[in-house]
Image (cartoon, rainbow, N blue to C red; front, side, top):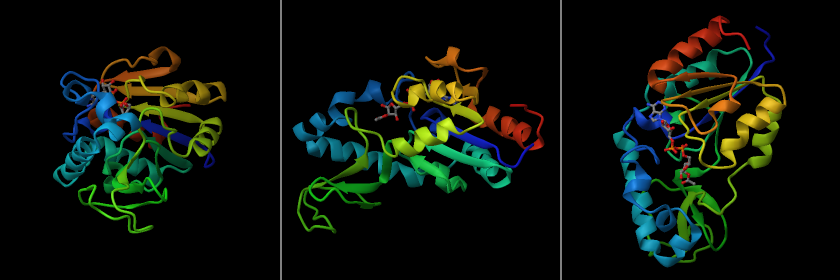
Amino acid sequence: MSGSRNIVVLTGAGISAESGVDTFRDEGGIWSQVRLEDVATPEGFAADPVRVQSFYNARRAQLPLVEPNPAHFALARLEREFEGSVMIVTQNIDDLHERAGSQKVIHMHGELKKALCCACKKSFPHESDLSLEEACPKCGQVGTLRPDVVWFGEMPYQMDRIYDLLRHCDLFLSVGTSGNVYPAAQFVQEAGQHGAHTIEINLEPSLGVSDFEDTRHGKAGELLPIFVDELLTGSYHF
Ligand code: OAD
């Protein structure tokens, strides 16, 4: 295997499911518990900021109670041992990739453990609950902090860099995402059109399954360690 090969891995909520983090659209998932419009749009935040802060405070408080699973560890191993480059682009706002040891992670939908000031637009680490009584440590204004997560209607982070990676990768691997949300749902086409081999690993066929050249359906925690072994031994050809 040549040392110059590039792998881009797109991950979604399904990779954290076996860690005990709810997905969004599976039965009983987050969007069956709360309305997306209420907690994941700028309009929802404007209408009821306390509800939105509480929703993300609860999700942030869950993080110390969950652990990375074998799927996260397999990707960290791939980054460490693969001769080429491995970049994770995650839609997840949890920190499980980093805690498994991955270092090259782009959080395109933001991070639970960061806050964003609506006044000065600065982002900074924030591991405790957010409240409207709090002052921004950067500009001093009170009541301007929100979770640094991307909501529907907002532009995901680092899109130029992500498209550049997609255009220059040799393998595009999608793990644990239903393919409902754009632009991530379109990454497979972008990578495929630029010559990458494309594979989906997901519990069930995603909406975009027909865009992938190869698919494996089942639990990421079971399938990904096997797939990473194949990549590292060179027995999977792409
Ligand atoms: P979804 O909940 O839409 O999809 C999760 C996918 O993971 C489904 O296709 C499941 O079949 C699959 N899955 C569940 N358990 C799995 C397992 N153990 N192994 C492998 N796959 C499994 O979540 P996302 O596609 O990540 O955005 O959702 C994308 C975005 O929609 C999220 O980032 C979030 C949400 O609204 C925002 O809030 C902006």
